[in-house]
Length: 109
Image (tube, rainbow, N blue to C red; front, top):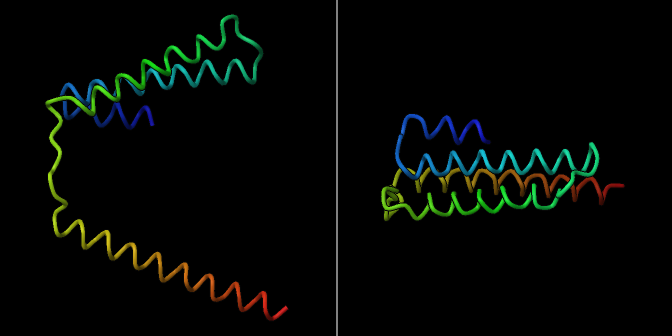
């Protein structure tokens, strides 16, 4: 996810994209310290080493979302909405079919 955040921010070059990429790096640092603390052995000041980069990452990503340079559409385009509805109904149909087959197998046994 860190690579996707950085890769996505490079072509954009906006302040929001840079803040989110730096926030992703801080999440990576926090997760690295967490994994080291849990699986390799206790770190001196382990909770601080895990939580400080975690909260910095949260702050940076929140700042990137509230950045004035962030352009958000005020409405979902019709094409995107119809695509989402088609995907939803396909998933619904597939899950209904799975439920029907599962109930048929359960009642058969």
